[in-house]
Length: 218
Image (cartoon, rainbow, N blue to C red; front, side, top):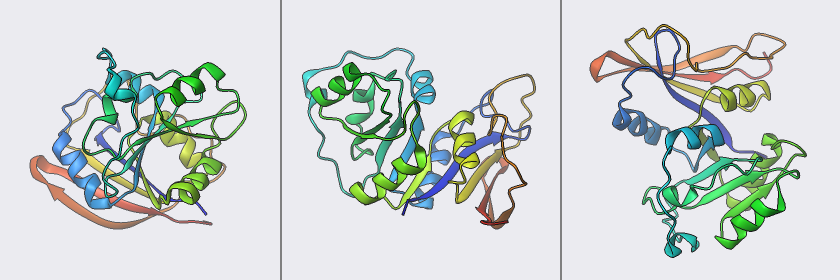
């Protein structure tokens, strides 16, 4: 058994993820209303979000005892690229960090995680096997619902693997134009994925939220 997976994103009318002002209060406020035990984020998203990493202190290397009501932050990083977990570890809205790695992840990176008492899950050979990893998150940590906080690559992989159960879109009334990341990268799906609209809501500034359930077996 695996957790339910929800893609939650804010996009422009032309399906862009960047190039416009993001209302962070609205984004995370509506995310909280969805209810989730863990936020799933890719390494590219973390690296782009924190271009300058503040120095790590000794207190940052100690395992966090966060509120059991707070969600985990689950980082997909088989390449061992992210070394800024301490930025998130001390945030009050994070219970603790779990890193998803593969069997090809270097021993040096695993030792780096152990030295800082970060939990990690090994799945897959060259890349993280997300289906297996999600199952472990459910069994070992009791995670029942995961919300994505990522970009087009991880969104696409989850959808291609049939691991997405719901999609929550906040559509901002702007057209960005040009080039840039979109909700999904080029999708390799054999058939059309059908969605059932569960509800829509209008938020300040003309932002429309649409919540869809992925129709399984269609």
